[in-house]
Length: 144
Image 1: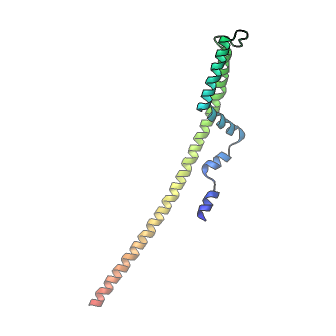
Image 2: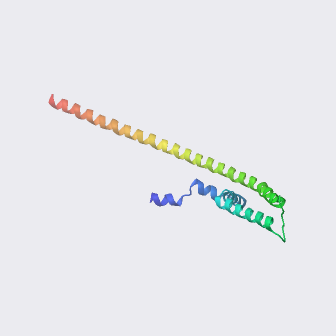
Image 3: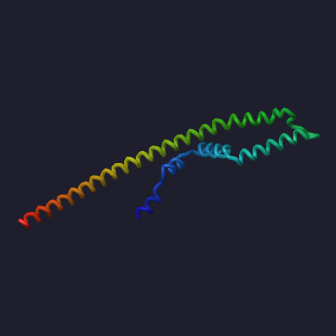
C-alpha cells in the first residue's frame, strides 16, 4: 500500500514543472534546443548552403560577400537567444534550490527517525540488561 501511495505523490520536480507558465516552458524548450548538437549541425548546414549559394550564384545573390545579411541574422539570433538562455538558467537555479530544499527536508526527517530508532534500541538494550541482571540475582538467591 505504501508503494502505491509513493507513486501518487508528486515529486518536487513535478511540482516545479507544473508551476511553469507557457513562456517559461517555451524558453526552456528553446534553450534546450539551442544547446543541442542537432541545432549546431543544422545551423552549420544552413550557413554553408547560404554561403555556397551566394558565392556561386551567377544570376541572383541576395547576400554577397561579406554576407552582411547573414551577419544581421546571427546578431538578431544572439540578441534573442542570450536572454532566453539566461531565463532557462535562472529556472535551473530555482530547480536546484527546490531540490536542495527537498533533500534537506528529507535528511531532517530521516535524522528524526534515526534518533527515534536509536532511542528505541537503547530502551530495548536497557530492558534486556535489566532482565539479565534480574535473572542473575534470581540465580544467586536460589543458590544461597
